[in-house]
Image 1 (cartoon, helix red, strand yellow):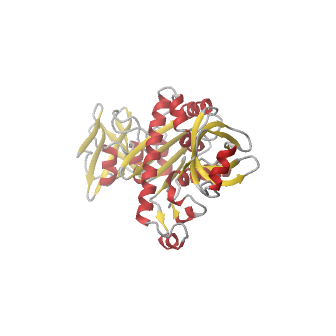
Image 2 (image 1 turned 30 degrees about the vertical axis):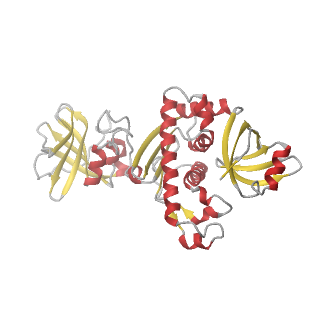
Image 3 (image 1 turned 90 degrees about the vertical axis):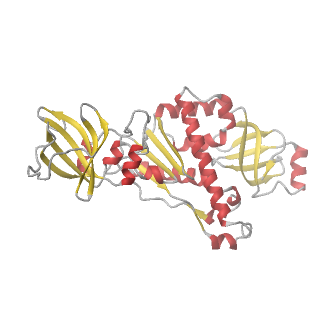
Length: 390
């Protein structure tokens, strides 16, 4: 028994004519995806299945924004159909409607096409929500225990916490990285969407009054801070796209993993895993109009993790904020941009000279290059050369 054979309800009093397409978007042995206007409303029809005397279709009202996103590959067929009201339609071979019924999105969900399927095969995959096409950042997570009805609280909290850390790290301008200056910028989040978990982040908001009242930040231009956040977001999205493409091709080259170690440590926080509640993640970005959409499954994510592990003991470059100086051991603690605390070992004279010049001090932002050793409590780096101060 098919899902459509279970549909036995509906009305039979359709009186507004046959389903003659206004525009055919996809043709397969007849119109398979098409639009048809009735009165002021434009409907999108999707041929879902066939029966002996005709076809089963889904229909929903769409606007130009949805249609443009569908045609350009920025929205999947499922995403275009997934509106508040979805019509189930049975039509005969002459496209006359013989039965129809309005359903809520939740009740019609089992009839919708697969997630991520675009209008044309030339698009590899597509987002299932408009929020994924116009948000600054959008993260969509899939898992066995995640549905439109809910998910375990522990899963929800873990994902939200990780996304928060990634967004703040990826978008906070370097000019606001000192002390508590990052409180002067925030990132509005749209209402999360279930049936998986979609978290969409809108453009940052700079607290201009507080920014100008701060000691370190009073001379910063709020517009420049905003532009810096956007530039960082665009770079982050581009790095994700490049990294996922390499992972799909078989894995990250060691040099790429070493050169992008800081970014990869940020990214790995939100990736799915074969041992976690999340089996797939979609990321999309509309930073400064640069559209990015990638999908990462657990296999590709595990390849990225393996690449990180392979270079952990090599010489790498990391950035962060100094949050402690230990004169006895000639070391300083670095709170890295990927959330790890690292003890950085300098040469004896080197440490004293940098402290004496007052360039190595608490709260300063810097970058260091050296051999990195990951440890349970606090990581270790044997710094090679002088730190780079920002």
